[in-house]
Image (cartoon, rainbow, N blue to C red):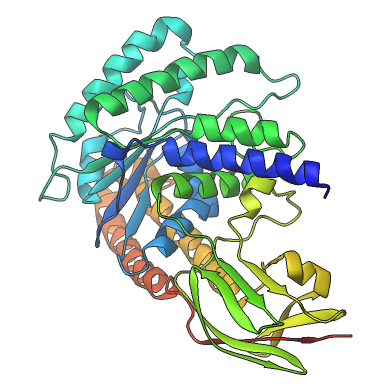
Length: 415
């Protein structure tokens, strides 16, 4: 990469992360608390979070000691005021009460934006009424829930599918309304529109969406990074820099490095991470340069000319030349990455079981017109089984979210 390209990439990276950091005003910064029950509500964006688990994985690893519970009540097509449901399904308050929600992450605005400029005033009034109503409730039986507002994403231009330019003009109006209401009510606000617009313009060839407005697999991975960075103003990326000539540890963030030893064969040291890393991007994705910074990077300067491999607990995880190690090698196959992928898969499975519990395919027999006489006999035990499975899944997720300690790292010649 030329110096000019490096400066351009660094500029875009600074833009994306600066936008993420300033998306929440100081008075509205957010911290999770131990035992929080976090519920996502909203449109397709919220609903599809359950399929990939990227964002939930990041939020879980950020606070492994908090034992957070996440439930997704998103439903495609939902707006602040219109949420069609099957007969006898129950309203939003009822379901938030069943989940004992202490944190509500509300993702609205995409569907409403199609009302255009004429719908802006109603949207503002609906948000104000929604915030007031939610804060008058005690879904966990103790105190009003803490609310986070999440904007819709940027409409990515897609040939032959809608007018992205006009829709984005409307989206900007609706996002501005959300920002105003968030400031008026001192509510944390995650502006996904701005950061996804920056990403889409940084590298149009790596698409974020399937159809302009619904994220694809890579889009959910990327947005998870941006969402997490916005909420965690103190986020620290994993960086280790070693000088093999001195020898010394010159820099370490996100982890603790100890016991550095240097010999003719290479370097050896111990690593204890502060948290699990971000999940790796989907296979085949061309990762935006501004998001590569989220991945762990190991730099070893002043190695003698040659090829070197990194072993962690005697397993080879990376091989590169001395010149590559000198500028930093991005790590994506460490034991910690394997651990975070296992965690993500557990989260996806838990979310699938909750979906079957909350939105059963045979709703007419569970709580609809055919619930009697057989539904009231057959389904309560099955629902209790799902509840038990979810409790077990939560405990497994908490145990898997802890960072790895005392890993033995070694860099040795491979040529």
